[in-house]
Length: 155
Image 1 (cartoon, rainbow, N blue to C red):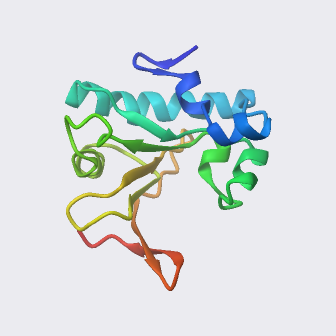
Image 2: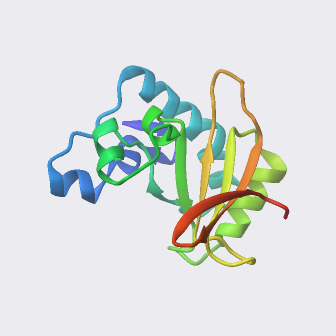
Image 3: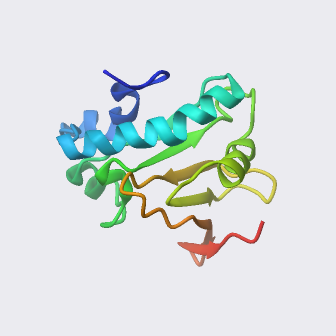
């Protein structure tokens, strides 16, 4: 099933952890509608702008899968509203290119520069709320004292 022209449901539900542990990772109808919205409003515009593959390193996570990987109980991945994107896999564009495109051109709920360096994040977390209550919140994930902390992104 296609969520948008260049993104399939299989790409956003694939999980080695779910497969290894026998965890079902199938979205509800509501979560599927959220996945379509993030695909059409975030993923597809990026794909069309850069005209190259964009890897989804984490997409939908059922509640059981999210718990198994230690995800936040309020993770938008579990409602189908978030994707983690990693362009570095293909080497055509960078994760910073994706991050900057989103911040400059798209409406989003939350955008996170995930770790990495000041020049390029390891991946980009982005969420979209189809109910039009997008916060336009921009954060940077950093590790402090062995824990993940989120700071407001200063650019």
